[in-house]
Amino acid sequence: FLVYAVQHLWGYGPAVAGGIGAILAVAWSTGAVTVANFDGLGRRLAFISIGAAVVVVGLIVGLASMAEHLLSLIMLGQLVIGLGMGIAWGSLCQVVMETHPEGERDKASALLPTLQSAGYAAGSAVFGLVGNLAGFATDPSPEGLRFAMVAAFTAAVLLALPPLALTLRMGRIHRTGPSA
Image (cartoon, rainbow, N blue to C red; front, top):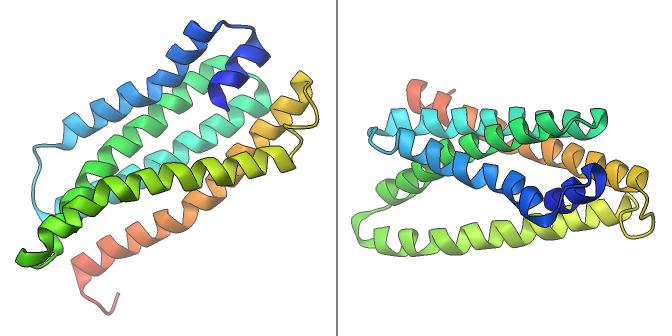
């Protein structure tokens, strides 16, 4: 919805709106490259938690951007979400592969792109449903679109909190043992 929203709420054409949408991808790559050379399970678990927290912050910025109708915050939110994803995803992939038994690592690594694609599909379905239930399909006005975007970002923040809590718990268990 974001590129569509930039076009219809701020009046930018597809190229500029697409460029704003691409900020997330560039930031994701930057975050991934930044943490790629760090190793060790503890450090990777920390990056997963940090990335998840950064994503939640970015989603909150995105929510504020829609609520306050501020394009600059949309760009900042995209940047922050992308950095968080970049910091977390590569580290998560490494942890998944390294914690599986030697004979299972190929299967685990082969599953990761499928898991990522399934996440994209499920996310699109959930946020499409949320947006449509919030009136995206029935109210074509800018106010209707903005309300649907606020609803989608609110849902994203709420749905991102349990994974954040789990990553924090995972790191705590690693540091202190299973009784944490």
